[in-house]
Structures are given as structure tokens and as C-alpha cells.
Image (cartoon, rainbow, N blue to C red):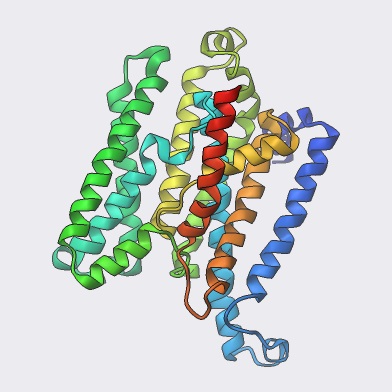
Length: 345
């Protein structure tokens, strides 16, 4: 087992000492923010109650509400950050993010269908609390299937056509969500609007544990491809001559992004700009090689998402802001700055 793990993560030896220090700092920040997110919020914990009474309200809130929520925020942020870095490396485009290929839009449309139409078609007791994640994952899976169906036979130009198909999928999904918004009732509209803005309020151990396991395994599957993504920056023909199986690499990045983003969107709603902003911040701090960039983006993405969730819970307490508003407020100015920076260069 140890030899397999060593082989999978041997690419990390290409990280220089400065980048190792940056990763250590990001990991330390992650731990600090994790505990701050657990103990800070609209509900003040009594440490005496936590340790003396296992059935107290403090223990219930901490173990059944706060900790699952913080774990979900961390894993969603890590998956979006890692997916953004991987897709930017695959497309060789600094403006790429997980929503670019339409997976987020497909998941959002699937969940929106259940929110607006599900109560009149499917009885809630059939799926219980899992009906919304299942519908979103089905939507994401359909999108990735369409991507491969429409881009078969294009060879090295497949990535370009995949981008175009992703843009079309996003447009169709926006139309579908708009129609569902128009025909929804007041209660459905409120739920739909809040979900599309992103929230971790519905986290529970029963709901998130399968998702956390799948996201973890997918991230571990993706990180060893970092060296191949470095070679891909030379161009697909050159990377192929250097021994990179470009087709397999495309499959790995797209499938891993589809899985992690689809699951993340199904549980937390639409959260934008994290996959775009985080990889650029990590590059600015420590460099561009993917051996450092992929784990760094996962760590910073988790920290950023937990921070955004903490702000959403505390800025207007006891009410709660949608997390997507926080990330958009951070990401939109950065996105404009990035466009002007690219234009100047």
C-alpha cells in the first residue's frame, strides 16, 4: 500500500522548498479557519456544557449542524479549487473554471426541476432528503455524456469544441432555470432563488458522508496527473511526443471535474468564481507548476469557502446570507482585474 501511495504522489518531489513552505502555510491556515468556523457563529457554545452533558443543545448544534456544515464547505471549496486548476491546465486558458464545461449548469437545472416540479410528480418519501442531490448528479452526468457524444472524432480540436458545447449547455440551462423560475410558486421561488445563490445550511452527516468519500477519492485520483498537465502546456502534439497520453489525461480531468463539481453543486447550490480565483491566487503566491498548484488550490479553496460560509453566518446574524453572494463579491472584481491583466500582457 505504501509503495502505491509513493508512486502516485512521487510527482510532489518537483516542488521547490519555497512552494513546500507555501503549502505548509496554506495547510496551517486551513486548520485555523476550520476551528474558527466551528466555534464562531450566531450560536455561542458553552464549553462547560460541551464536556459535561453529551445531550445538551450545545453538543447537538456542534456535532449535528456546525461540524457537518464546515466539513461540507471545506470539501466543496477544495473540489472547486482543484477542478479549476485542472481545467485551466487542460484548456491552457486562465479564464477556465468548473462551470465552463456546463456541469454546474446541468446540475443546477436537474435540482431546479425537482424544486419546482418534483412535488407534483415524485412523492418525497421515495428519496427523502436525497432527492435533490440525486437529481443534480443526474443533470451533471447527462451534461458530461453529451460533451463526449458531441466532441467525438475531433481529435486535438476536441477541447475547443468541448468549450463551445459547454457554452451552449450553460445557455440552455439558463433558459430552463428561467422558465422554472417563472412558473414557480412563491415558496418554490424562494427555495429556488436561495439554492441557486449557494448555501451549506442543509448539511447533515447522512447527506454528506457519501459525497465526502467520493470527492476525496476523486481528488486523490486527479493529483498524480500534475506533471502531465505541466507537459501539456507545451501543446498537445509536444506533450504526446514526450510520452503523455493526451486522450487519457483529458478523460481523467473532465471526469474528475464532472464528479466533484456535480456533487458539490448538488449539495451546496451554485457557487461561482471559486474555481477561477483560487488557482490564480495560488500561482501568484508560489508558481505555476501543477505539482504545487493542484494541492495548493485544494487547500486555499477549502479555506476560502469556509471563510465565506463563516461570513455568511455572521454578517447579518441571526439571518444568513447566501454563500454565492460572498464568493461573487470576491470573485467579480478579481475576474475584471484578470481580464485587464491578460489584455496588457
